[in-house]
Image (cartoon, rainbow, N blue to C red; front, top):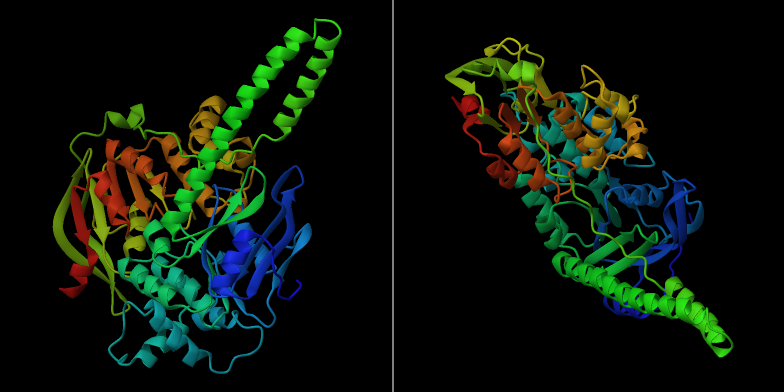
Length: 525
């Protein structure tokens, strides 16, 4: 890609330039598509200046992560170019670590952040771990210093890290080479409250340029200076100045202005059409007037604004229990009297006060990253957990945070079809549509869907499955915040048994927890 400084000569750009100074990243007539008939960007232009921290915003599927991939040259523009300031380093923290990299050690993963061999990687890692508080959850007794902690982590394989540790590691990899331009794609996913607090502090103090994708509005509002908006109606890039909430309000006002302008034009167009229809049947000057009015309304139609639409939200939905299981839902559905936790890096079975879960009960499992929450949920889902009894004949629907229950090589349609004993094509497509998964998405391989779409696919799958027990492991990760109240309501109204791990307290409060199990307290006993 070209590397030089450029300047866009317009009022907004002059205002931004006077505040921030030199350009460090710009898009010049940028055009990109995966399929020619569905462009993501079309002759898009924007300019980002040194020290700006922007939210990248747009509808689901607008191409936010794709734009990041273009900036770091994983994808090449069809036309136009990305211009980067001379000798500037760019780092991207993606949403997930690909499964093919899980066999790497943490040290090997961090080394991938550099284009050349780095001989002080351990020292750099120790310093960067502190920024986001990435540390081993369980330490052996000979681990006494931060350097010891760093060494323990660096030698671990990624597959042995918890979900929260993997999320933090993605951020560490982006920060370790001290970039001039930082790109963060949903960085608060998998972070606990303390992790979000530390990342927020870092972003406030960070002196470089940053572009962030996130559904955490309070996190964004704490440090961003504006919004870089992908308008899916015209495939352009737009900038809005102000903190996050102020910029969002400006976008909403712009949408309302576009609607009003179009409504006024539509009224005038219809008036002219009515006159044309009346005068066209007259002779002489009236016919000429009709032709003039026709030209006028055709020009007005061309001047109609492409109204952008706010993110669509999923339809309200209900997860039912199938008729065969409904008759078995009386009495105790699940009983837990022992759990397995990780303590000092060792697996340990711990007896607990008996938990009995009946129809409508919802159990929240708590504990620090790495204590074994995900492992416990997985063993229960596979009915291999010691000390956990599930009533015979009750099916379990399992939402894994990494979506590993889905076959990434199959299409979304094929995966949803697995939820049926007898396939009903109309019901499947109708259910999928409620989760914003249309024909195009259903024909797409699961591995090619965005992380947000995979999450919605899982909710569609569980809706079609109609199980008697639902297990959720961080179900709000990657999910647009507009969908979360609808999902919370569906889980609250679900009549079966729910087990859930979630770090989003507001979401958990909405679903009506009846029981809690804190693995962290067990580890201190």
